[in-house]
Length: 96
Image (cartoon, rainbow, N blue to C red; front, side, top):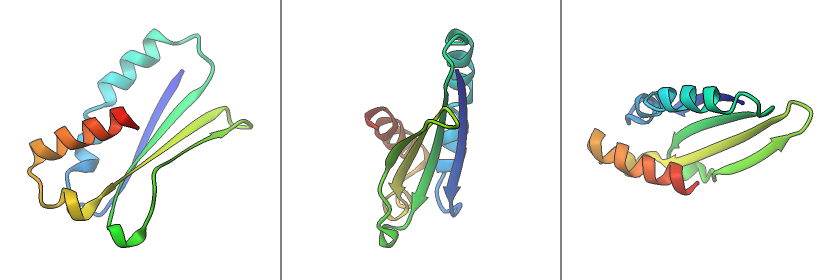
C-alpha cells in the first residue's frame, strides 16, 4: 500500500502544516500493509466557502488509486488557533 498527500490552501491557515503531521502515520501504515496493492492519495483543501467545493472520493481503476479530496472551510479555519485547527481537522479527517 502506498500513501500520498497533497494540499491546496492559500496559506492563511495551518492546514498544509497540519497535514504534514500525518506523514509518520502514513509511513507506519505503508510498512504494515505492504502486501496491499493500492495507493491511497489524500488532498487536503482549505478553500473559501464561496468556491462551494465539496469533499469527494473516487477510485481510478486504471491507476489503482483511491483519491480522497477533503475540503474544509478557509473562512472557518482562519479564525481558529493552530491547536484548534488541528483538533477540528483531525475529526473531519477521521469522519471522512
